[in-house]
Length: 118
Image (cartoon, rainbow, N blue to C red; front, side, top):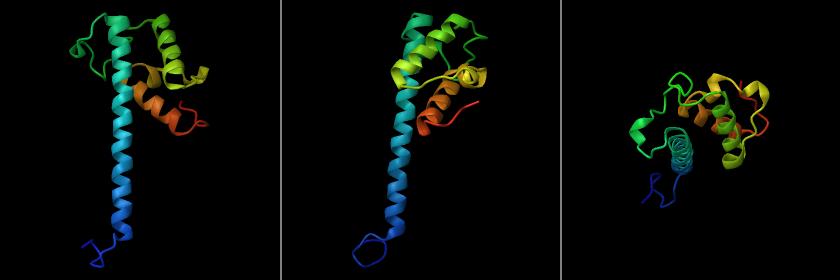
């Protein structure tokens, strides 16, 4: 028996189930995006696969992990790996200075191809 007592799944229950699935898919995509970014930065800039060497909130510039050339290389990685075009006005710390910021930036760009994240 379903929530409405009729043997049919009621509309609210279906909506909640659909919302839960979308949330799970979204969380999985965020996790995959973060894993790819962390792997790229660890391998190419910290020369390790030790996840403990990079906190997702660490400032990549302040910690000396990336310099201006490194930021440009990360931008190229974003374009190639995630299909995200980074406009000149989007090249700001709030978008590019940590794994967390990069994940948010990528998700915002992929969520709306016409959105500008500034």
